[in-house]
Amino acid sequence: MKRIFLAALFAVATFAVCQAEEAPKKAEAAPAKEAPKNVAVGKQAPAFKIKDASGKEVNLADLTAKGPVLVRLTCGCSGCDKELAYFQKINEAYKSQGLTSLLVFREPDEKVAKYAAEKKLDMLYAVDSKGDAWKAFETTTMPTNFLIEKGGKIISIAKGCEPNGLIANIVSEKAAKTVGVAAVDVQKKVEAKVEKK
Image (tube, rainbow, N blue to C red):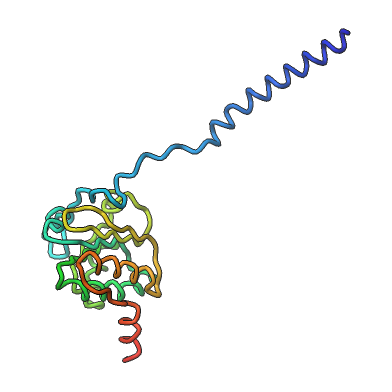
């Protein structure tokens, strides 16, 4: 009887020790709850100001008061560089319907100025080497594209780089719908330009 009692006592003590060791592990393993995103489709775009290439302050609220805005947080890496041609076609296609394109680069001013001249950028661009734009838009992905309708509501967020123009084509379709015109197939536009060379 004594042996049964000691075995039971040992089992209870072992169970208690195991439970005590498991509790911290469960607490560690439980994923931390993410704070709710303020920047999401259907929500207002964040308050955001930046100086453009000429040093003039650009206020996102002022831009969205006039019409839809496409904000592209990007860099000059090879993927973003290849994808740039498609976003230039988006700008060309919908600029006359009121779309403003704003590129925000992470590189230093000098590098971006040279790059902009080489690429013949015909859109608003700024440099943010500190990454404040990425913080304001709550993203770490590069590139990330935010399509914002007139009035400031985010209607599309497209993250990641796709050098063949698939993401750009999706953005083009949404931009076309926003400005009320037929969508331009930016993939075909860029391919046609490349074939002419």
